[in-house]
Image (cartoon, rainbow, N blue to C red; front, side, top):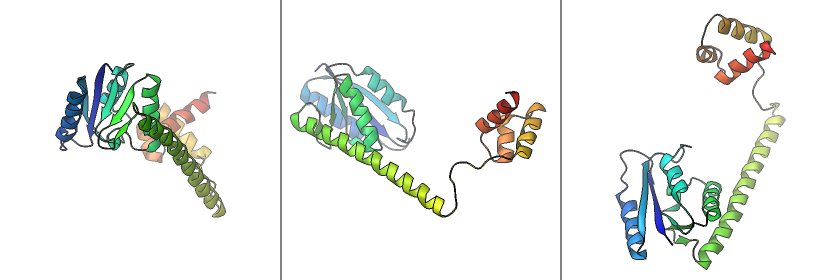
Length: 190
């Protein structure tokens, strides 16, 4: 192994990263490997976790990607599987210290296989819930999808846009998205 790529995350600015950082530093010291640490204070709900992206890019073949706990890396089994799969493709092993998850060991490799099964299971459950919800809505007479916008509203949207109103203001006024405003404008030009 070349080095350890450490990743620490807390959700808010007032939370402390010290415990995670110390645990990863101790792990690197025990392994006798150089540590490159990536740290951020951002909610995992944010799709743009810049330091996570940087850490993933920095990891190269033979490195060990280390987190303190699995939930610091991902919000769902599916997301965790996708991230660890990216590491596997780069031939980077993954370790979660407090969860005793280490893909460089036979047990860790087996756990990774189970993780893939759980990720698929999670996807299936979400699909089943979605289908059941749509079926229940249909039984109640609801079709699903977004309501159609009648021609009078479309005409007013076009008129306001041509008069110089911003798409954002029009969207707020009619309770629609900006993209919908642009779609209506585009329809008229086709």
